[in-house]
Image (cartoon, rainbow, N blue to C red):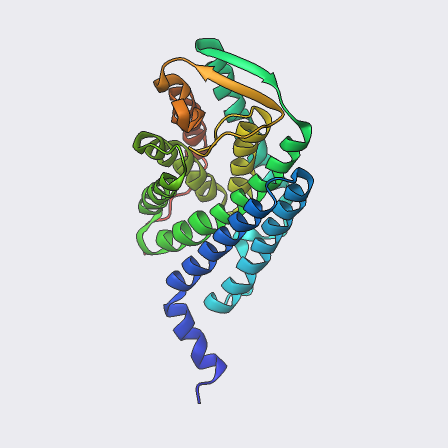
Amino acid sequence: MTTPTERKPRLQRFRFPVLLVATAVLLVAARGLDALVSGVPILRLFVGIGAAAGAVFAYKWVTRRVENRDEITELATTGRWGGLGRGALIGGAAFVATMLLSIVFTHADIGGGSFWACLGVAGSMASVAVTEELLFRGVLHRILEQRAGSVIAIVVSSLFFGLTHLINGNATLWGTLAIAVEGGTMLAVAYTATRSLWVPIGLHFAWNWLQGGVFGTAVSGAESEPGLLRTVLSGPDALTGGSFGPEAGLFALVCCLAVTALLLRRAKLIPRR
């Protein structure tokens, strides 16, 4: 009979596919829950927060068992709120700068929305930010970095992050490539610079929530929904992002790459072992 100590090395050998599947299941489950309660904003808020917290707990539990780790340092309790706050400030500032440039250089029709819808989107984006960061940075980037170095991990995880957005209703090839270059790279470098998932989670949440929940624009090619405001940008698609949303526009690309450049100064790139 195989003993527990004999099973652990075997699990560790298959840690990448096991963790990849586990976190993908968490992401799909969170999306499914959000779809079920999308018509009830206050319920959407609490379900989204609960799904995010549950995903963090599940990731820690699975990772401990599969990798035989006592401490899950990328989700350390110490510094959690500070990391989330710093990430949210970075992501929020980057998107506000994107919108200000869009308003100045294109035509923006801004109307009133719904406070409750804004809260509902906050719950949805909390679960999206957590589950996507666990999958793309916590598993794909982290393990690939250990095997091939930071540069390869950043490039590959960013590319896959962008390509997954092809399934969204208004997705375009340019939009998904833009997401890979601006969003994927920015989030990957944020993790590389801090060795913590809290900063990219906070950054991801603030960017998405301001985009969909506050300004009411389309998020990553998904259909736009009511937020605190309703913003319609008119002008060249190269500037506004067209139906994909601001992320496919030049201003988002410039703002995100500027943040990425600043984060790169902090990052300590890990060479291949």
